Length: 81
Image (cartoon, rainbow, N blue to C red; front, side, top):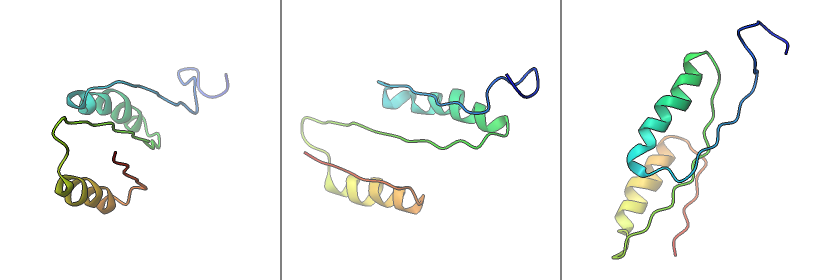
């Protein structure tokens, strides 16, 4: 491949699925942070699926999730059902 001998790829896409919410920080650490540390520009697409037998409060969805993503300037959507 082209480039320096110790550099094999100029572009990489990492996929991971079925990550428990409690492990998302670990995924960020081992994948995103590691790539950014090399000087790479990294963009993340995130899909979160959540369910609760008694329902998820509207305040959590509107005031925490949606507002937090808005403040991060993230393109986002939220579907309930």
